[in-house]
Image (cartoon, rainbow, N blue to C red; front, top):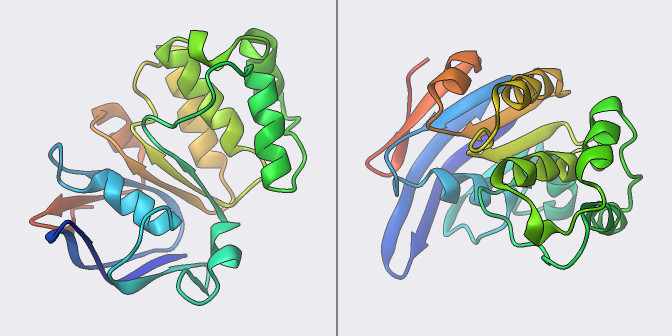
Length: 203
């Protein structure tokens, strides 16, 4: 379960998120809202990638405030535009991710397929769709139960999008997905919308 209690995030005196309350037990939850509403900020706050001004995040009972490392080991954040060294090949980046997480390189069928196609290519040469596939490959390192995905279907063709849906459905616990993609939203188990700096449940 992922729980947010009175989550508040500010940037340069501006409140981005205010007293957000959310409890999501399992499955895929779509996070929707206008551009600039705070979807990416919410995912980054849950992952501990940015500071929280007030409140707390709990990942399967582990508080981000008091058990940060333990909480973060239970999720993988896939930003919309990650920053990776462009000169490194996808396989090298995968091995780097595995080393940082003290985990093995994933050896499932999807990972092998992705590596066969783009493993030898430098990250800076990848198309948008190929980068999205690489990001999901990196997220598989460590077999974490939760994924936090920011616009994961952008640039994917129909086959790759269907593979994404299957991967999200197969996660041990689930995923929080910030997206504008109506097909992805429809495939999620629930939907929340960010309105006026807080979260409103839609489904």
